[in-house]
Image 1 (cartoon, rainbow, N blue to C red):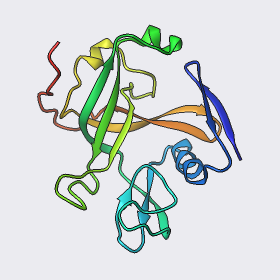
Image 2 (image 1 turned 90 degrees about the vertical axis):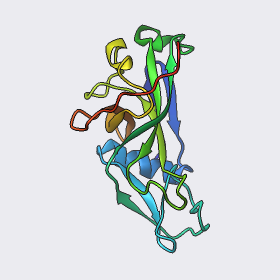
Image 3 (image 1 turned 90 degrees about the horizontal axis):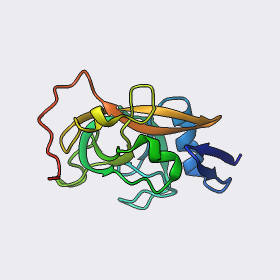
Image 4 (image 1 turned 180 degrees about the vertical axis):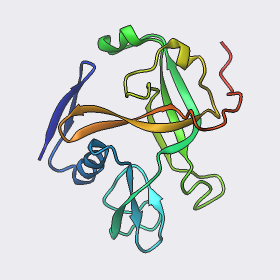
Length: 171
């Protein structure tokens, strides 16, 4: 069933034909992070798709994955193009290397998942939190409920992890 929702003034639509995305966001709606694992090559992959990007097989299963990782890169947004985001500037969009399957299938690869930097309750993080985050920061996944059957995977500081001094782009 197609899903239509609104997130901070942005229309979101998942059509019926987006079978893998509907399944992925359905797991997120249950606040469970799951990725597809290819049965023949046994590798996880993201984003969801009809075939394995490593070997091309369509034989896949959904598997629960711990949503923890390290900030690989980030974008600190000071000029919100979407008007509803303006009250939240500056906000951060993170690209996170998941801990799971890091260094596979080659030493330079990782599963990377993008999402906003949020508070533990899934609301966009404020400037104080934004100032603490950079490359190397440890984060964990949280979910922002948007509509029935749709929650967005987001990132918050992992308070249980030892935090390195993050690297930030010069201002």
